[in-house]
Length: 186
Image (cartoon, rainbow, N blue to C red):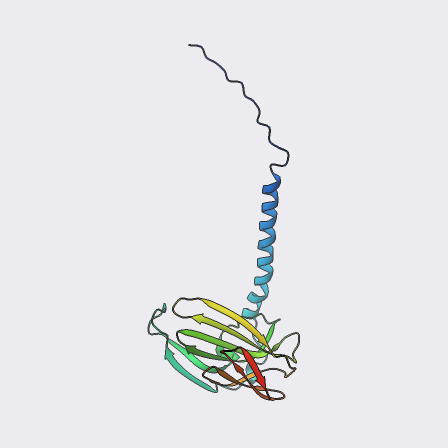
């Protein structure tokens, strides 16, 4: 038998073959950088303590109610009511966005709603509410920020009844309807 040697033919690659790979990596690095820049203020706000914690009064109302079935911790208690910042735990909004005054928590139909009242950090004359909702059955979460259209100053939650928050401001009282996401000031 003869031993045939195969000739190796060089495979010619187009000059731009690496360009899609190069651009793909650049896009991935850019997306990761943007993600880090978005996450950084959130992470910093979790560490910072509010300077107003020492001047806030104790909870106006508080009750304990069991977390509904389907939760990871059956039989655990979830505190609901209105609380000072020192009792409410970490705030899900960066400190450069919301300057909070107090917190309210309610559970309605297996949805834990945490409401953070205060003002916008860069525009303190505008009141703001950050509303974090967590479905205790599915674990789904949503976070929404609502600001007042009028310069009423910082908001403080006075009461929560059904879907209505009663709010105090520097210029009087008002309300926020959780069902319609609307403020009302007289």
